[in-house]
Structure formats: structure tokens, C-alpha cells
Image (cartoon, rainbow, N blue to C red):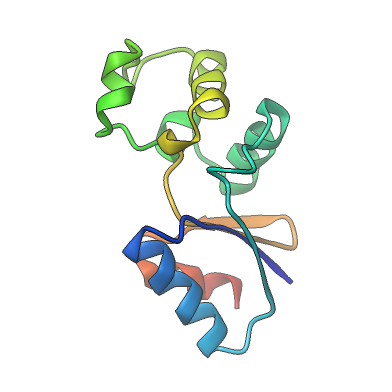
Length: 113
């Protein structure tokens, strides 16, 4: 089972979901904009991705700058911002067996298959 943090309005997110399904993967989607991840879940995701919180963020979003965040912001501040404003979470993210991957490029999702 692949858990897929999905934004159905995002073409990359839709393409990733199509790729997983085309390969026969069983996928459970999570509309993370509506079902906002907790700070604890975000910490787990950062660990599963093996990256820093800022690498899981859409730093080009206007909101990122409006909140006064930078790539050097403290990890707790970045996690709090993503929990309060899930639009800042890079998408899509797929999780399976304790491993996670950001689907950019879409083909990166194949590592979970």
C-alpha cells in the first residue's frame, strides 16, 4: 500500500497518481490540504525522505516569503509553517514501507514500486 499525499488540482500530483496506478500499485490518497499533517507527521515524513524540512517545502510560494521564512529558518519553524499552511508542502509525496519520495520528477515515484 502506498500512501499518497495528493493535491488533485496539481498536474504533477495527478500525473504521479496515474503513474502509480498504471504500475498496479495499491494507492490510498490523502488530500493533505484538507487533512493537514500534524507536526509529528511532518517530522516522520522528513525522516522517511531523509531530507531537511526546507527540502520538503515549496520555497517559491509567495506565502513562504510572506511568513518571513528562508532556507536557513529553524527546522521547528518550518515544520510549524507546513502544518499551519499545508500549501507549503511540496507535492506529491508517496510513502510505502517506511520509505518516502517526493514525486518531482514524476518518475521518482517508481522507486516505491
